[in-house]
Length: 151
Image (spheres, rainbow, N blue to C red):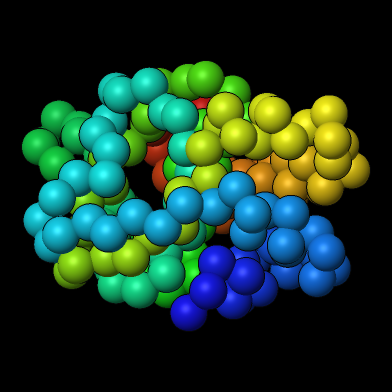
């Protein structure tokens, strides 16, 4: 499966034209991660986002009881998107549950692309923001519980 195929199936890129998809496929790098290997760890500085090409990754969070699995992600699912937009600390850990083929989109390449393709970069930034807003709305009750029932 090519980078273009993976991006076509990824929800963040669903409204992109073939040309827009090709722009991001041109900066995507294939990565293979063996089963049991961390892709990144909670607390690390994020420098890339990823899309699962093949395999499954486990998203975890450390809390008072240890490590908790938040999600299992499979083909065409993105993760680590915030790191594409800003230099920040990873909020979760992601580990390859199986041997995984991933597409990596590095922040440095995204930033280099912005002056050349501002509309495509803005469109992706807005797609990421919209996806994060949807996830926050879906997690509203969990967020209220973390805040002690206030809100």
